[in-house]
Image (cartoon, rainbow, N blue to C red; front, side, top):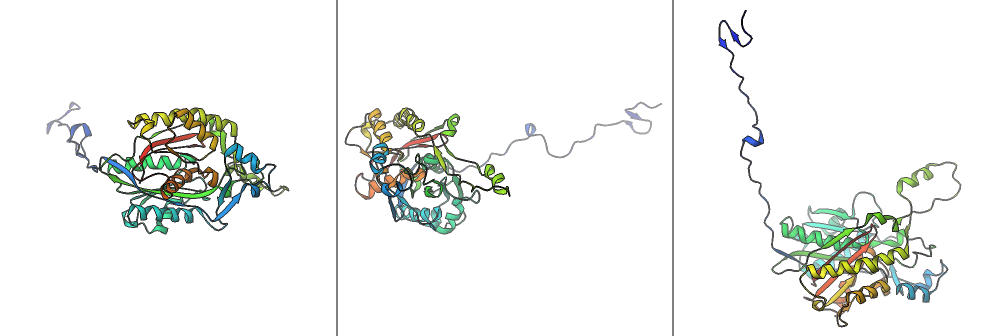
Length: 368
């Protein structure tokens, strides 16, 4: 009998030859090409858009048990802007973006990425950013929405800076835009007087000097319920499909635990702002402006006091005329300060956004 490894005619059987790809450990891996970006980035232009309609505290109080005096004392808000019924976040974003692009001296063809920070685009999908790209005539950009509420614009600036320095983009359009009037219950005494509409935008591009400092950002998701939509869309579906339902379905407007949010902002955000200054290698005396999210004038005043900012530093207090515009508040305020000569181009500004999530982001920037 022949052995299992030999044949009377051919002798021992040779091991089969293995063909096909070699294991990665046995072949030389080709080196990937990566873009070589500039060392620094900065904001080249900034623009803003405020809707025409001015809504006073008196008008708000027609629907809630409050007063102009109480609203001013508690928040610093005197009036806010509401967009027209047929005016969308895309419309407002377009106005602000064109102003920012004009200041930056760039055209639609120069934009590689569009980041739109918003929580009030009324579609689950598609996002607002690709639609804005079409409006602006930007050819084939990367385009995505950011859902970071009141911190969204500062998140976008940090991401844009990293994209440019990594070489994945040359110019990034960052937009903060909100139509919060669509998601505000005019009869809710806790929120009806707070929110407003508007848009702000910035063009971020390469720089031969550091124009955007390190971004300090983070979140505290354990407190997600402090600012939230009252019901999820899926929670509404059973009610909408119930044929026996007699009472009307409530619109899922925003709800906020005001006192909890106030304490978080006052006691937690000032340390973030201080660390941002330190991470940028400067001191508070080096700042020319402080542009915090316009949430509440008392929050702004408390942060200024805690940070011990010198009195000559310009502090954004646009909430008096705009209300809380969430992602739009920081660029709206900075654009106005520059337009009115309250601050000068080339000065240093500490900007910080904080809100629902809870999330926050901050950086020191050279103003365009």
